[in-house]
Image (cartoon, rainbow, N blue to C red):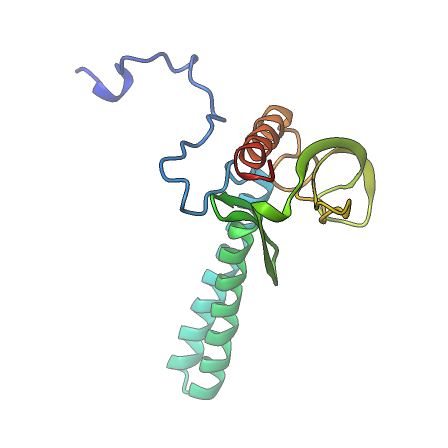
Length: 183
């Protein structure tokens, strides 16, 4: 019995897991890298927790406590929203500018207000925790010399132990800055 899914034209060993994402339309906001395994794993754990909380809401609703069930449902929806926001976090680029999405805020800087984007060697936070380690960071600076907060590091949830992916993402953001930034 032939297995057509195993007889593809490409070799399975020759494919790379970290293939850069294509950019079809430069007017839409795009993340120039894939979310890392730490970020995806944390979101998966939050969604698993949300499923248990939703199950608890159903059990509470059937036992006769509609107010308590509604409160537990709100908690479950908050956990789901947190998981989705965690997946949205990162650096996004478009023709309009550079967008840094954090957990509770989003900031956008037009390319005309960015003088250059560069990778530097400096102490960086490990997985966003207070502990710092020596690593690489992607920085953007304004024309007056003021530096924006760190955009990407090689020790954050997207690039921990994925050096090639960090280099590719940093090069892509630098290329966007060179193309659309100040002349």
